[in-house]
Amino acid sequence: MTIDKDTVEKVAHLARLELNETEKEEMIKDMSKILDFMAKLNELDTSGIEPLVYMTDDVNVLREDVVKQQITHEEALQNAPKHDEDYFLVAKVIEK
Image (cartoon, rainbow, N blue to C red; front, side, top):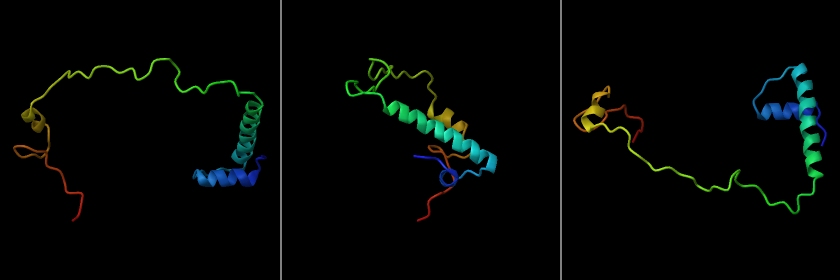
């Protein structure tokens, strides 16, 4: 595939980018280099190579969920700009 000015303009439009003429010329060069690199990678025989899914052999290494600080219901409501005895009061955002 060859990269020309029309291709760069189409990609720029899809990415919502505004490029001047100098930037378009630079993009043509950069995108051509990327495609050349991909073509070089496609020359490699990877038929015996297993796909890499994880960078390490560890799978789902998780830590225990520990509560470090606990505040009471009343303390939480003290920081709210508007509240009643039980709940935070917020502006209505859904119309019925």
